[in-house]
Length: 342
Image (tube, rainbow, N blue to C red; front, side, top):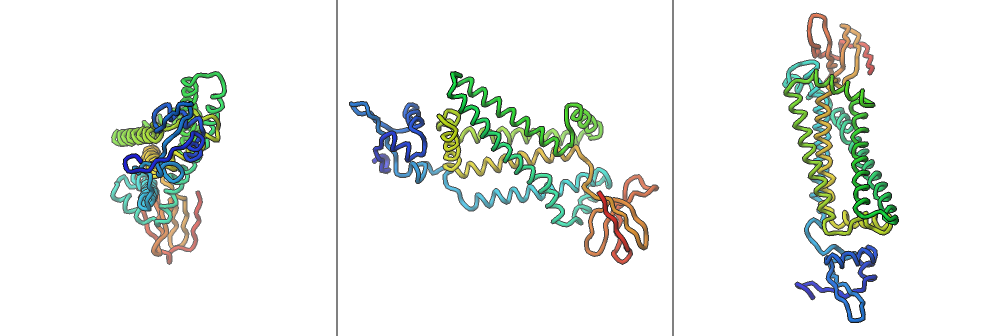
């Protein structure tokens, strides 16, 4: 008994089975001094584990209990972020392209159905985020598989860690490249140069400063996310040092399963970082997500369809005598035919 906890004396094999790790991993923990043990005169090593350690728990209460409020908080952050991005996708381009006034653009955005706003938020934020998370998980597993296989070669540990770091950086660069293709629609260095040159010429100083501030916040959240992931493995067995890929995968699952609150915090943190990045990218694209519409009836109107609600068609109509398009509201009784196109 130690500090009020009942400890059991186990062999290395029994400790490995209870902790769900390999015997080599148990021996390494013994060498690092993270497991209490003793050695008999005949050379046998025994490990002492509390009742809370092993399959039933980790022996540490901090961050090991996931409550319903944690999941609810994460879902609330995701829902709020998705809706905010949907609003921003309408409000900001409308204010730049049509109204030139943030208050008028906000009123126009308030006319749009919530379902439409959420749909654009899902398209711009949630679906790409889920795809990015899936991509990072699969790519990380591939990198871990490569490094674990390299462990069987004569390469030193430092070189294997360098290879793993290089592969992770390559994965992050590839992820950013795929994101830029999705949001910006550019391919290759020339396309990037043309896009950002045009954005630099068109954006005001305030917009450039706002975009820069969002990117700085994104970098801070990304760094904090990496620090959080690193803290989850501090003093623990490193998966890339496992003897097999199955062992490495089991260590990763065990680490995240033993600290569910930290795990969900890591997922939420990378979501906030992605949210900030999407806002920064949206600042460089001032094209409203509106469809072309042509209304026939009491009067003929061509323009960009904002929404149809409460018996009115709201259309941004470009008139020759006006510099910017004007928002007009046409009642249903004055409309005979509506043609909508992209």
